[in-house]
Image 1: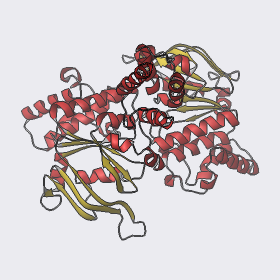
Image 2: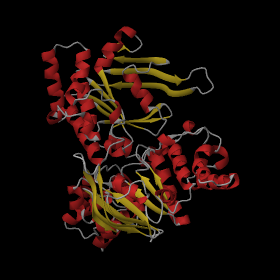
Image 3: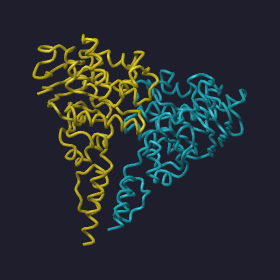
Image 4: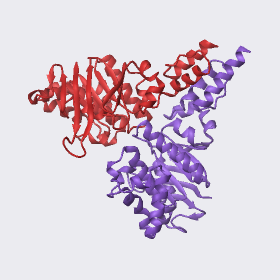
Length: 285
Length: 276
């Protein structure tokens, strides 16, 4: 198993009057090659949870295993961070080098890679995020568009060659074009490299389209952990905790309420068009 | 009314990295309008927003607020009182350590008498539904609540025009809903004029008027249905149309009698039910 959390609880500032429990009894495991969407309202513990995935936080109670080794006991947190690449929110704020090359090279250089190896990795990582190596390597990161800067930041994490890529709301604040660039690169990475991806998002349409498994957090606990279509059939429960469902799901739920015979678990516009056209053709017959 | 005539703006004029950010903009914002401005990154939205209250001054052309020109330094303070701005980051615009003191900051600077300030602060917080948080420390609030406090600060200045530059971009869905409801409410009940800049196309659905910027120009300007229903054109300007509008287009292409300018789920449900 690539990642396993066993009865993990986490309390900020434990033992003080300000103690606040952010995670309670989390049990979850992620296999190599999965694409997992992590959703939940603000304050539900998403960011705290992903910081346990890469050893930035050590659980107050419970254990975290990376490749079957217990973090902090059998594997150092520092090594965990290299295996589990975490892209924070607004990662472009952490760009600092004078060139795109320098920024992406920072990680592998710290790992002690040779200059040759560094160049290979930088090239590969930039290509993964869809930026042409020759035209971007010497540019200043600060001359790039918001979407490009964010892709450079993601390339910096990929250059560490992690086993898992964890992204905390990677499309937040971008325009539609920037959003689509990032999402299509993630999809590509998942399909061609079988990279394991955990995507934290507020956008239901986004995770529904990409992830093959969703984990819903609420008040520090796992509320659902299942295939997207099964989770979206719990629309009522999701709305109660301040989340929505994809637009298409919401459409089909309303159609069912009005007595139409359509599936309740659709979320892609393309599929929706097919189902609706079929339905009307059947009526005509 | 805010009147913009022949407005062009150049960043770094005369230098190698000179950029023409706004190119001959002509635009009028009437009192009581609710306008949503869309456009991809770099299209000039924020540069335009900063012209409404004279944070930036035109390279060419003119911006007039209720007849006062932003080019006239003597009118600038009056203009800034008339046109209030809210920015992206909720943490960068709150200055005080208590919510009500932050809202009072504007009217205090205007020299309003204390009784008047008290009244304005109470009314402003009530208008954004934040009265119960008057004595809170701002850092205890959610992002959506902080943006509502920032809006209250503008209301307490008695500004007529609210210009918001991506106020929802860093908020979660709940915070986004709170801010949008607050803006709609202020527009309908208090008659506030709202210019709302955003990347979220679903926030444009309920506006009266949608403007799409592209390469420093106004590319589209009209009712949401007319603007967003033109799916191909909107896409070519870097904006993803609402999912239900895309679905309507697909259905119409495949021969169903569905109008191509459906904007939201409710409308789609009504249309499909009337077909069957």
